[in-house]
Image 1 (tube, rainbow, N blue to C red):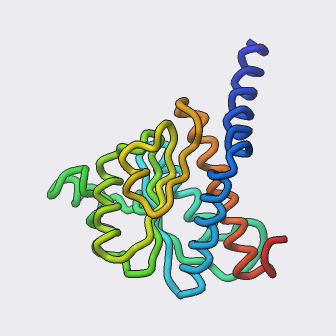
Image 2 (image 1 turned 90 degrees about the vertical axis):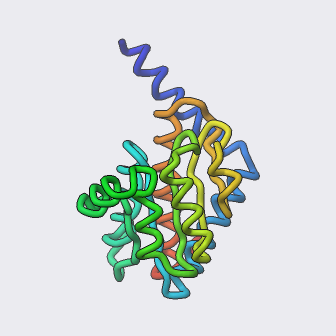
Image 3 (image 1 turned 180 degrees about the horizontal axis):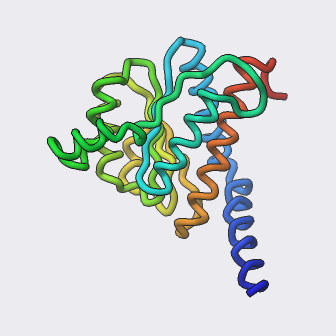
Length: 195
């Protein structure tokens, strides 16, 4: 069993090493961080959504921004579109599950906001629909995916595609990138910038 545990950890490290070894992927992460900072400097907000574990990641990232990540500072506006059970169940009941995020983007998104859609496959229909709603409203879109990026990668303004086919490794890498974004946003807005 200890050997199995070792290999699970080694696989996670390998997924993150693949990110480190990809200069284009690091460039995209940097571009997304800069876009987020610009969005906030312009008085706008971020919105995030995903399904299952990706919903938890959306909520985690939004909480780091609204609460705090590394130090005390003013709250940063971010919405996880996965948390309002009345919205989710009403929209799901009246329009179908594929519309649970796009209707929220329609109602709460504004031009200049930024939407992060999280899906390990990149093919979640409800995230794809949210991207379409975002595009119609002039909202910047970020796909946080894995595998080949799926349909979301081609639709997004920015696609962060984790170079892995294993869902757990992709999800572990997504939260790492979420933490990096939160750290940079916080330091750029309130901490004197990153070195």
